[in-house]
Amino acid sequence: MSTRQGAPGPDDSPDRLYTVTKGRSRAPEQAFDLVTLIVAEQEPTPGMQSEHARILEICADPTAVVELAAELALPVSVVKILVGDLLEAGRVTARHPRFAPTKARLPDLDTLKQVLSGLQRL
Image (cartoon, rainbow, N blue to C red):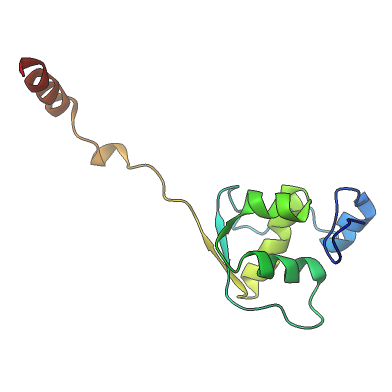
């Protein structure tokens, strides 16, 4: 066990991780990116699984999935399963990163050439 009380540590055995995830090896269909921000919508409740409670405590402020894994000293795959449980229960929300603009939103090549030409004339 870890030196911090109640928090899992890097020496957790595969049996422990199997128990923590209730035997599941994959996150729910709405898989999370490593940079997906998780935000707690509720505080931990008595009797809650300790890893779930710890995630809710950490995510009082938006926290990336990869940061959660580091803080909990658990594999990212396990953290994704745990966060998926909390998401399904409505205890957290997931804020996916915004993607880069699509090609349709970028200025066309002719406009960029005209801007470059104008800058060179200055």
